[in-house]
Image 1 (cartoon, helix red, strand yellow):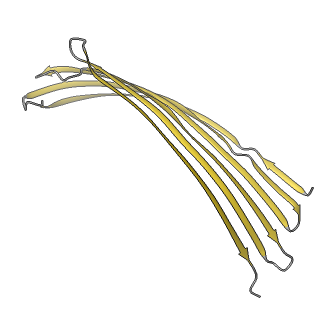
Image 2 (image 1 turned 90 degrees about the vertical axis):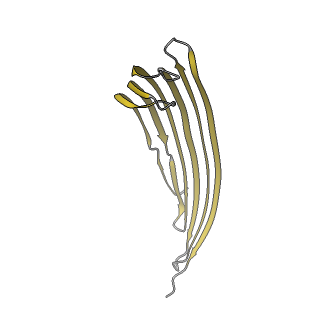
Image 3 (image 1 turned 90 degrees about the horizontal axis):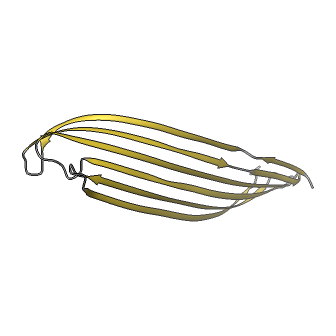
Length: 177
């Protein structure tokens, strides 16, 4: 059977945070009339990641080595925001209370295989194969209301992406002397 080693690294972490901000905006509105707004906002976010990367190394005899490795990672997140706008002077914006929600994930799976052959004369051959798949998905919703409580702003966005790739390579080494 030969020598066999196996490693199984696993990791994970989470995050969470809040940001609060206030801005005093003095400027002009769309009609170029004076406008003074006090904007208060709060953002909350959280998420987490898990990673898994098993590896197998097999040396059936002194001339041959086989390495196989997989790597998987997944990340998920969510955020929520609220923005309140008080009009101190001038016209009222389309929306004075905005609330948004955003969330999604991305993940990657990668595998590789390497076979190495060494001769007593020092020549070495390597063959490598690899494949990867990644994808992500998100959704964002924004709602806004005007000073009378009427819903004046609606935005919804969904997105996704996916990628696949594969590689193959070979190498040969031989001593010159």
